[in-house]
Length: 562
Image: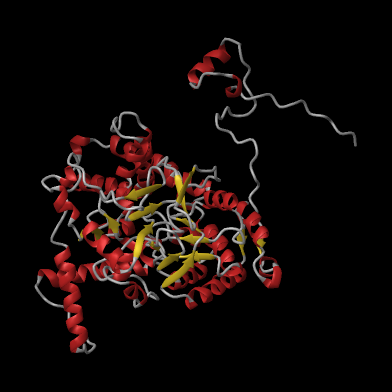
């Protein structure tokens, strides 16, 4: 059979048209200056798209490396093409890494040189970009500060790739726990939905047991400026020495308060500024003496100030602490606490997810610690495959909109053909019930529209004209950075469009909601919950002392920002 050579495909209209308006393009086409191309004129069309991998990576291929270790190059290429692992391979990878984590202490000891990376949040392709730039763990020692999952669409890929590196290089790759490596946050945010969509609930539960095994902090030795303590969030009133960190029982779901929660959730207070409404009426001296105050931004844990952090560093012979947890416009922030006589800031914040949630337009950063002074490098984001909200397919995503328009037409038709003069009270009530049912049907598409409006507001020039895109995203997204409150959980369960609304799995959210409701009930009736287990007098006194310390630290509250 003779092969027929097809003519070359003509270029898109937009590729040769300097204007960006579709109406202008149509006007030029109407005048005959341009011909209509046979394909849609997308302005940001990708020339090369990698075909997604539809084959699952089996266990014998995954562990085909030297000494039956994970084959990292094969896994990398498979995950880049959005490939998945078989259940047997995924569980084996998780369990092998979990066994390694279980043997590690709460407080790791890491010797410089080491590269520290902050929050990843499911941005797999950005993480690959950084690791390709830094090189293999044979060349570079890695320390990750937590928050590998949620917000981004490729949390499972991030975890599988890092766990494979941990198995191959257990003494060169270190991973700490973040506040999102918990049952509560995984169910409230996106990781539960992602696991259920890409794999199943069995693999999701294996990930949860892995999270309970992750170490909490790391002590870096060997820098010329002194020792550096790393964790995800920060310190709390119950953490006075490094021994206190090792005494924490980490193999559990973090409670609503306590030292485990403080390591994952606390934040440093903002720098003092006389023009900042947050510090209105507070002098610089008063600000410098703040120890701990209630974390009004997170709704859990504390803000820690210079009055707490500086004595903590002196007490433990530390030069500084390095943490993640907070998105930064430049990818990092040096919390000097207005000190001028120190070689290092009291605290560093490192955030390694550039263009966070595809909205913030921020840079990512990494911190390199060697024998010499610290080195901070920033980087930009990489393109990644597009995912529909909540990992839906095109049909599932479109049906609510189609249903909404059909129902609206039928509703308007039914109501319009009725004679309003002859309507009875029952007819009016029936119309009201009809409208209520349609509103319930529209809940799913309404939630999607709210997210779309929020993103449009970020891109709008009229929304807070004096704010950058980063500041707009930070303002509109602040609720997602909080510890879930009972109201947030109830709203999530009633309006959620996927797994949680179907009741497939939400034990952590339900337990949290029931706990908060019972606590509020007992508090309102002035009752003290009584435990069935006997409590020794020493533990009772220690508990009272800890509670008094926490209550006293909450007496100071900064002003809310306007």
